[in-house]
Each structure stands twice: as C-alpha cells, then as structure tokens.
Image (cartoon, rainbow, N blue to C red):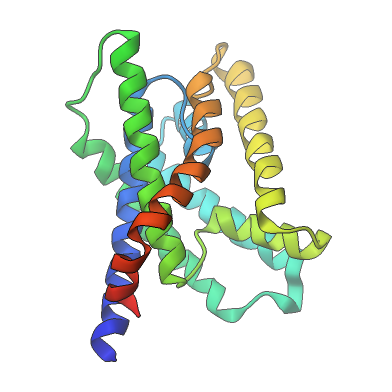
Length: 213
C-alpha cells in the first residue's frame, strides 16, 4: 500500500516535469505559447526575470486569489500548491535549459514542434489528473471560480484561459510594443490539448491505474 502511495507522488512529480517540458517546447516553437504559460512568459520578457521566477510570483498570486474567493472553504491541503508551484517553477527553467539547443527553422518545423509540445503537455496533464494530489495553482483558481459561480470546471476553464491570453496580449503590446507569446499556437494549444488528454486517457488509463491504485 505504501509503495503505491509513494508511486502516486512520484508520478505526480513526473507529471509536473512533463507539463513544464511541453510548455518549454511550445516556447521554443515560437508560434505562441499555451494559455498555461502565456502570461508568465510575456511577464518574463517584460521584467527580464526567468519564466520560472515569474511563474513563482504567479503561484503566490493564484493562491491568494483562491483564498479570497473561497475563504473558509479553501482546503488547508491546497496550501501545498505553494510547494508544488515552487517545484513547477524550477522545472520550467530546468526544462528551458534542456531544450535550449532546439531552434526550429521554417514554419512547418515550428508547427511540428508545437504539436509535439501539445502532446507532451496532454500526457503530463493526464498523469496529474489521475494522481489527484494537489491542483496546480493556475488550475486551483479555475476550480475556485467554478465553485463560487457554481459552474462546472470544464465550462469555466476556456473563459479563464482566454482571459489570461488577452491580458498577456495587452501587456505585450503595451510594454514590449509587439505581440509576444500569443499567436496561432496559443489557440491551437487551447483547442487540442483537452481532446488529446481524452484520447490518451482511453488508451493509457489501465496502465496508469496499475501504478497508482
């Protein structure tokens, strides 16, 4: 039983790394990042801090938003998001270092890398969902909003993701003078990652369950 529990936590940590790797690949594709990383990426370009450092700041901000929205209904265990967010922030910078050598040339190669990044993120998200440990801070905000307005998570997520992308676009144009991190790849990522997760779930569920259940 303890082995399964340890396995669950190890797979959860692996899921965070895989998601960060997928996000880093989307940055290297240079066709627009996924909604998850879009705002931190643009903020990093503006502030000159690393994406991971900015992600840590957003981790704190997202947790504060959840506490404000949920108040006494905020589960104490969700404070672990601070630890998870810190680990994820480190993984982002580490992943960017790992893929630093990848510099696709030509639109087709960029698009291929973007699609690979979506597949990688989707696999990581599937593992994260299956382990049911703690929300990533960005997802925690969506869960909090869905609880407050009493609308299901899948219906709230597209609106929150869209809001994040719009804020990133506005900040980019205002402070950088051009549109950074928001392109067709952002839209593609937002549209296809969910369906890819469903397909992977259909085929990989039994194997993942055997490791964590």
